[in-house]
Image (cartoon, rainbow, N blue to C red; front, side, top):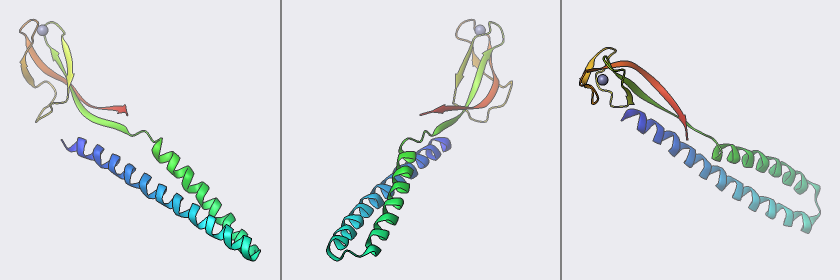
Length: 127
Ligand SMILES: [Zn+2]
């Protein structure tokens, strides 16, 4: 189940960063409100500059957050293609354990012929 845990780890990382970005965005909003109040009180242009920079940073973080939440993680899994040598019956599964091409793995449910591993490959699906 190695590939499963790798997938879970990516999901976990995505969730964690989404959380961090959301917190940063809230913090920036609070800072902007704070400096806006300071500006309204003192009328100093420095506060406007800070607000401008914070707004830029906020846009960047907001964009990153959007990118992270809309990110599609390609899910990769190792699968094997099983084939019957008599009737051509085939199926795909992921129960790979010490498998190799042409290894016989059982009987065909249709014709009772030999089922063998025809191919082993990585399948990618987006979720
Ligand atoms: Zn068969």
